[in-house]
Image 1 (cartoon, rainbow, N blue to C red):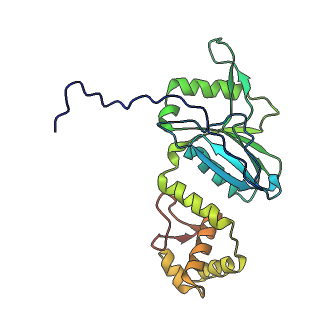
Image 2: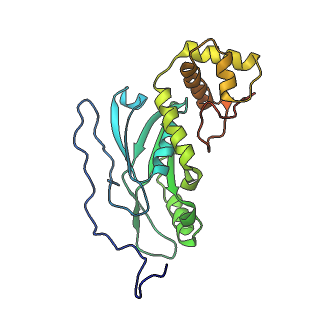
Image 3: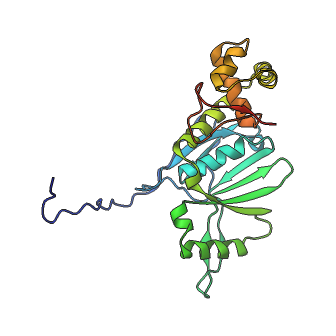
Length: 245
């Protein structure tokens, strides 16, 4: 099929609109980031989620993320046994780019606080951007100008590492993490340590539990690292799983 003369396949540029503002949610703390990322984008999927954390004393709070990569990083942090608090779209600090240009402001995507008080600032970008000299120079300059009181450590995360299956698994893992069942988890772990299995369904069949309950427990054990699985494929009863020593 031939295209008509003068056809331009480039998507039309859309008008810039103000960022969306979430209405108040009863019983949920509002978003308090310094930058609202909920703007229109042709490349990034904006994400809003509400989490309850130790830092909020168990009360849910709204968090806005500029991409699915950022929200995935947050979920990994939330699933850590040493996790305490999460901040997103942090207040900016000034940094001076290489070459003596005028100072700029940088808003870090996330900052995670752990139970011992250690704070980690996280810079999230996709692989294509991270491979450019411009972004590499920018990261170097930003990290050199991070105020001492801002964080104990700063890291860069490549959002390309979060495949669609990985992101979906993280969301399921977080959902099940909020539905603890210690007795079922202990039973499934004991079976895993004392019997051989190959697929998750093999493990579930050996458990004295309803299949759905066994699957949920296995997923929580995978999240905690007791069991291993391929996070880049959808984890279900047909998944290959193993016991981590």
